[in-house]
Each structure stands twice: as C-alpha cells, then as structure tokens.
Image (cartoon, rainbow over all chains, first blue to last red; front, top):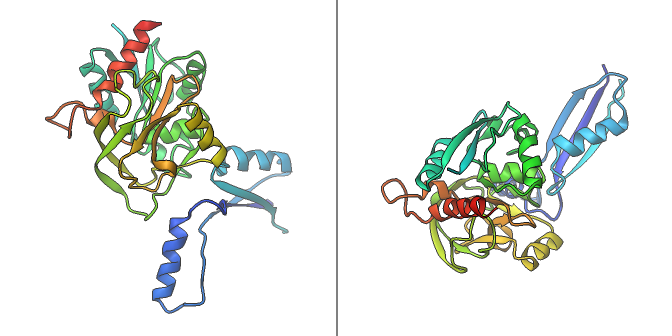
Length: 79
Length: 223
C-alpha cells in the first residue's frame, strides 16, 4: 500500500522548549555548531487508493495537528 | 437540587475530587461516561483533569472526539455552564469551545505546587461569587499548561474581559500570564489550576476553589 508521511512541526513563532533543551544538550556534547533545533512529529500512514489529497489534508488538519500551535505537511512517498 | 455532570474518560484522574467539590457546594454530582452520548439531563458539566486517552497524540486531541463531547459541545451552544480543569481545559480548547492551546511548559518542568491566581473576570458562570482582583491559592499540576494563542486572539480575550484567571507568578510561561479563560458568553470556562482540589483546608491549601462551584449553582438557578 502507498505510504503517506505527515509532518507536524511547532509554528516558528511558538516557543519550543523541547528543541531548546536539545540544543543545550548538543552544546554540552561538544556540537557547538548547532544553533537551533525544533522538535516535531512524523506520522506514517498506509493508505489505499480511495484516500484523496483533500482527505489527507482533513486528517492532518482535524486530528494530527493543532493548527493553533502547529503547521503540517503531507507527502506521498514514491513506491 | 441542581445536577452537575462530571465526565470520566479513560485516564481521567480528578473526576472523584470534582464530584466531591460539586457535593460540597450543595449540588448532586452525576457521573458521565466518555463513551455515552448522554448528559443525563444535567444542568452543568465539569470536564476534569487527568490524562485522557493517555495524552496520546496531544493532550485532549482524542478526547474531543468522544461521544459525550458531542453532547457537551451542543449543550454549551445552548448556554449550559461548562468548566474544564487542567486536561479538561486542554480538551475544551481542542474541541474549539475555547480559543488557543496549551503547550509544553517553558523550562520543560512539570509543575506541581500551590499557586496564587488573580481573578480577572467575575461575570462568568463560574466566577460570579468572587470579587474582581481576588487572590486564590489553588494547586497547579501540569506539564503542558502554557497557554498559547495568536496576538489577535489574546487582544480579543482581554478586550472582551474573557481572561478569567492570571498567575500571580507566571510559572509555566503562559502568554500574558493567562491561567484561565472563558467563552464569549461567559458560560464555558477553562483553567489549568485545580479549584476542585481547593475546597476545604483538610485536603487542600485553601477552600478558595469552592466559589467556582457555588457560582455555577447560582448560574443554574438564575436561568
């Protein structure tokens, strides 16, 4: 079955304390060149041919992301 | 006697204390089940705290689709008083009954302590018993309690007097120190701290939270 990847990220203007904590940890590990990390989510959906782009958008918008604080994108992976 | 429903989802923790607060205020507490699209004829609803559906995906993201929530959304549309506490506040935001969202605390720490709140609106169904500017001591226990909304929504909330509670010390980084807000009609209120844990000195830091439940009973009787 085709796979669809939905990526959900905190909006750029929303404080991401988890990402900041990761930057801090990287600095302590000696990776001084990393200046910013933002942490999001990746969803992998196995979908059949009946699932349209519109339906995927609805899935992302209504459930997978909270659009008050998160942006989403949908990518169909090539088999 | 007024009847106040208290919803239990899988993972709800504070339904028992919420029901107890309802009884201490002099009303009948009615248990409501997440899977039943039935409010059992109650006059008001409390959506209590905890970790509904394990907080999977996002806090409140799954709970908003529970059968009982469809009834709560419809009842709120008719003006029924609805109170969301902690995870209940997150659920009401996810369900669109209240604007904004609750994000991970600034500084990442789970905060579990008694906090001082300032009452910023006394015209809601849940805060009419308080004086404006009153200070309440109420427990806060949440990891994702940082209130977030767009600047335009924040301006609208402030302009319409819909910021109901603010933290005296903004411990989780909430925008404009907001601890609780209301719907435009003042019937739906959500807050992160736990008034149901502050109903008597024996079990909480104060009885400051009881006023919210008395207020709701006034609102019910005034209809």
